[in-house]
Image (cartoon, rainbow, N blue to C red; front, side):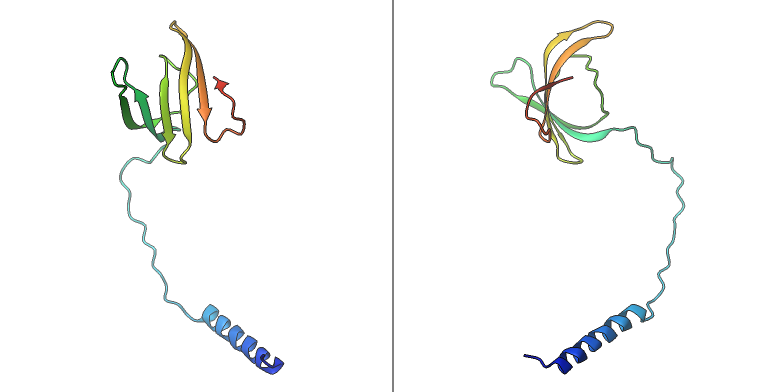
Length: 125
């Protein structure tokens, strides 16, 4: 065991080292901002998604995969049957249309399952 005098000496030594590291002069870092001539970046709300959808009328069943930037929407202009993974946060989502009536304003009853949904029941949009 250390005696109390040795403990105090060690504590003072550690404080001196910490103070020396804190106030020791460090070289200045020069920050340089380069000129930017392109258009300013803008965000339209879209995110990168991996989209996997079955190819219609294929035996054996085949899938089409693509990575594209998708804007959030609640409107579907055609029936949806796909699995998607948000590449930004890893969220998995399944979209399946049960009823679709094409019209000027289409009527779509689509089941949606999110892997991060608190309640594990299908939701309709």
